[in-house]
Length: 438
Image (cartoon, rainbow, N blue to C red; front, side, top):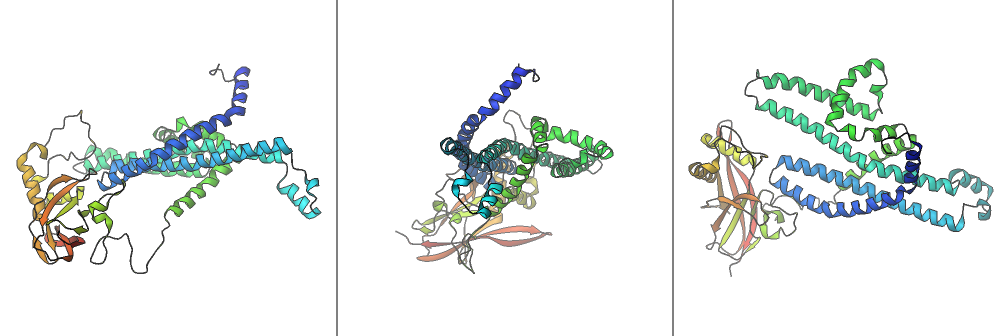
């Protein structure tokens, strides 16, 4: 029956389903809100972990997932709130019927104004019903919009990465990549403009013929064939179109609200990196107690130390490995195997894990670049690969401090770098700690 959509019986079924759809809407909204609130903290922790691991691909993926969750949570909470108001209005109508302006016995000025602005109670219920239905439908449509943006920029990024991989400018990759990149960028702007202008590029015959190839390609890239009927149903409805555009500034306002921060001092930012005047908790491993707390760059194990040693941990970063190649070019493999790889695919190449000598050279080079000072004294350090209890990957070493005086000290991590063939030293971390031996 569902295949014959012109069948009167099927149309009658659709009308019946429309009348009872509010029950399904509330049921789906309830389960979805519960699931989204449960998943959101986990996604936040995973996103923070991916950022600290400098895992660009997973960071982007989790950012999209968090954006989709945020949109759904806001829209579905708004939907449940309005549905609750709609159900309350229906119950009140059963008790007291329509609004009787004569019984209110207001003056002529207010009676006329309220009849014009408030009107019938049934009209109010009908308007609430329209708002609820449109918001519920647009909630899931907006997720496809987020996915469309993500897929578009992902494909553009892949084209650029393939072009960069081309070893010379006359390679086939460049000859194919440049026109493809130009097509994608022009198509992206045209599609976005057509979306904002409510299909302006489709209205003029000669423009529509030029725009159609871009439209067809981006329909596939953005998966528009899955939600296109919803879009055009919104566009041909004045109420739905108005509401969908009203939500856009609301989202921007909410985004601005999330960026607000209270400034406690005219002189200090309390979340700035540790230095001689600041002891930031992100530089002390034992103070990172929440699941979403991670070492950002460099940390020691505690702010107050009673043991005769201090642990220093440097978070692993792709930038660090690239710097090692500058100091020791033989470490650079012929093919870069970093990134997302399948365990089912056997990668051939010069992998460090297959060569113990190269592993030793790797750590030797790292230790020649990084050094540790406490106050003004250099201390011997031998960094090795390690992980924190939160599975952060990096380099760690232990420095003996039993001969230090009690009180405050400054631990400094110095890094060498090459700039224009010159080797200079920079201060990577300046972390205060207090030493009080048992």
